[in-house]
Length: 210
Image (cartoon, rainbow, N blue to C red; front, side):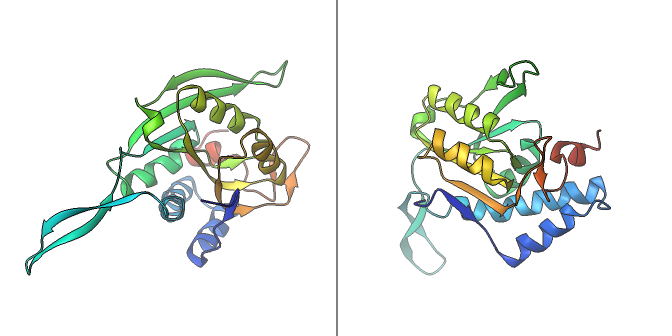
């Protein structure tokens, strides 16, 4: 994936995203839309996966047919909101290995602090896709990618629903080798660090919490 940022402007993605942005959309519908969009975004971020061929017999004749090469993908959910993207992607890529990373922001230092980390083995031999719906300041995302690199990951991609210019710039500065795929690049961050116009807190809207 050559470019650092890919905004997927497919009509179905943009339509579903508009419904998700609407404050009147219910938790159940929001969750379903996120699952649907995640599958469409997964299609884009896996576009250039390595391929090989395998010999099979069709009902007509034998052939060398295309199949995915190498070890299974690793999908890493950045808790908690990443699970909304993860669910849809697993429907599309059920054989993927799954990992989880928990981060929270220290209110004193404002730096991300890790509280949970469990990932598949042999990350250095897998395409690793980290998922988190919102790329806002980029601090937590950059920290998550750094942690995955420490664990051995070399081919990492980042998938989000919305991105702010500040977060994209932070990620590019910290990890220029990690491409970002998103449904929209929004205007900016507000004084509270929320993406504008955004859709609010993705985790709260997905799980019905405040």
